[in-house]
Amino acid sequence: MAYALGLVVMLLGLLVSIALHEVGHMVPAKRFGVRVSAYMVGFGPTLWSRTRGETEYGLKAIPLGGYVRLVGMFPPAEVVGARPRAGRVGELVSEVRAASAEEIHPGEEHRAFYRLSTPKKVVVMLGGPLMNLLIAVVLLGAVLMGYGLPAGASTTVSSVSACVLPADAPADRVCTESDPPAPAAAAGLEPGDELLTFAGTPTPTWADFQQAVRAGGGSPTQLVVERDGAEVVLQIDPVLAERPVFDEEGALVLDADGDPVLRETPFVGLTPATARERQPASAVLPAVGDATWQTLGAIVTLPVQLVGIVGAVVGDGERDASGVVGPVGVGRFAGEVAAAEGVSVADRMVSLVSLVAALNIALFAFNLIPLLPLDGGHVAGALWEGARRQVARLRGRSRPAPSDVARMMPLAYGVFIALIVVGVVLLYADLVRPITL
Image (cartoon, rainbow, N blue to C red; front, side):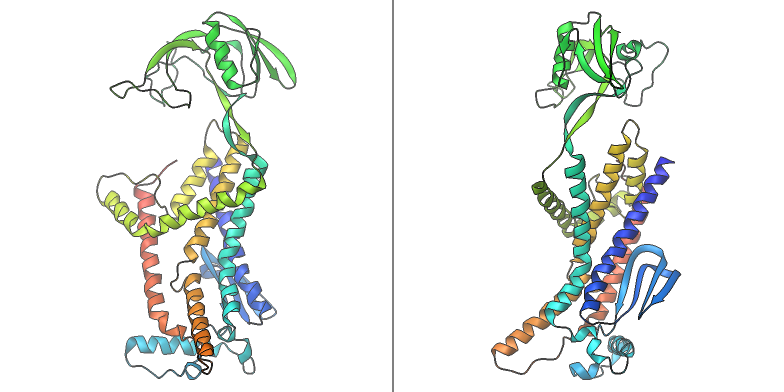
């Protein structure tokens, strides 16, 4: 049930992110007078639509994107002075121009997108990615300022061990009848208890509690905790057991052979909850910037990562745990986060919110790629047009015609096909060689 809930939360987060991305395009376009004939969330068959004013709003079946149809995206041939070209590519470009011209109503030529100035075109096309970046800032801001970052162990009990297991026991080893009960469980300690004193020694921090347990040497003693606002006195009998040694920074100490160093120490059998420290507002933008930089790095290395993914799928290798994943992988992460055992509901919700924020950062960074049909491709075309106009102005020449972006549509179709191939590879890899948290 929790796993399915995680998937639902991620799907809703994706749909809202896509919807707001398209709002980021639509609102400035309408403000600048461009007619927006359609606003759609998703691709494929239309599940629902309704026309309001001059715009059809709708929801489609495949929630992996969306679009707004801006009338007059490509200037007609007579505006750019283009001549018909022979061949299939020439026919494709002509068809794109003709389809764009057909959407322009008589007398509304001035409302075509291609007539906008360069700054206005850039604002419209960057409106979508910037909306995703804004969503990420808001979500990460809520997490950092409202919930905080992990700041070490607290004195609140997160979980209680049922028994004393050997130090070399596998992580999935379950207790048996031959395993002695853990002292904390035998004493009646419960998750949520706040550790107050051990053997009469106050334990305001987790380090203080550990020191008090070590100083006790395994002798029976009193443990005082706060439970539901009241102090509860428990009798606890720590046992001596071999446990791994950690250094002052919390790192596992290893011997010359690389094996963990073990030491006999008093053992209680409880796990502390993680303390969180709320961050100031000044920490939000650097955190978003760092996440964006890492995402851009992943995009740059995507071809190399795809080679490794294909090798892992075809062969018997393992995928890079920090590598790129597709929608199925993101959904798997959401499900695993929601279904994680021994983690509080608040921590799981914060993890899901952070995952949605990371998704929006990925949408922002990916759409900045300067290739059509991505938003970055339209921005690059607008900047090229603006540069040509500035050069002409400086040289005292007449204003050049709008850039003939339609000529780039064959490349746009190639990029679109490449994106489909990448999506299929990631889909297959996420199914047969999944990355798990």
